[in-house]
Image (cartoon, rainbow, N blue to C red):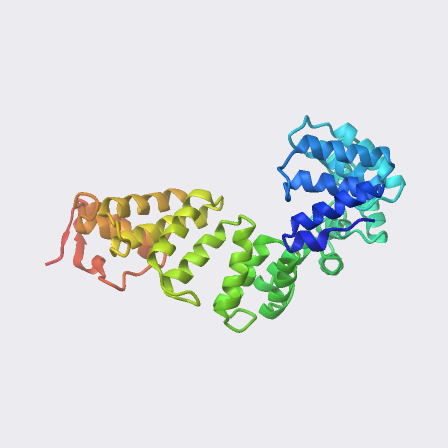
Length: 381
């Protein structure tokens, strides 16, 4: 069976494409699915679901049952085509009868949720068990979730954890991340930052950009591994190359504080801007806006603006309830920075920050303000 995964992990998409192309010329039936995957993901070629489906169908005509699974996934998820769960179920069933990879998982998933078939927890469990007997990482992970979370079948967390570990040994990224989180938090296992790091590291090497962020954070903070800013940057950059814009904030911080990278406020500002515009994580967006506001507040940006600082702090709070954004918004109101002086609003924001555990160590403005019984705020002296 044609395998281009090593090229995909290294972003060597052209090599993957050429290998698939040569495979088709040599009448390797598995090459059609690989080419379909490339068009599905937009690797080297322009993403095109119609072309992906066309290659999958050619694979099906050549009786490559792995192509049946890929086609079923398209119809199950309704990715740029009309969703058809009945057709998806039929395709997975045909593939299952021929032992195609991951077909047991998808049949089990559809059975568990009653998609294109009658909902049945017991039948789903049976299908996932068949999948584990075939060495399907997805089935190990799905079965682990059933035992871990679902009282309708069995709530055996020890069995579930062992299944998560089996899935992880088969390079199931979701299982690796689940175990990394469990060992990080100490949920149902003994907390162990080193084990957590090892699971995250393996997931990162398998190409998961969220895991790359976790590994970069570990190197940055020394959690489970020695502090190494060079390695932190390496993994953040890998995540950014995969369009994970959370990495913009991390690399922005490295430019801002001069960690491994030479201190550069312009680069830091540009990266924070990119994170604020492109990231889908609200907390990351909030942090990016806050950093933009702070750089304007402290006049660390060449075109700094008090109005922009005030606006950024407000945007940070709109994205997520961030204590430091409350603090600096309070400072802006008290000092009239980017807005009119408003001691009452300033006191309110500073108090909110304090209640969230964010203390004003720089000026301690709350100590200088007092509020009377009518709610008026003035300077204490």
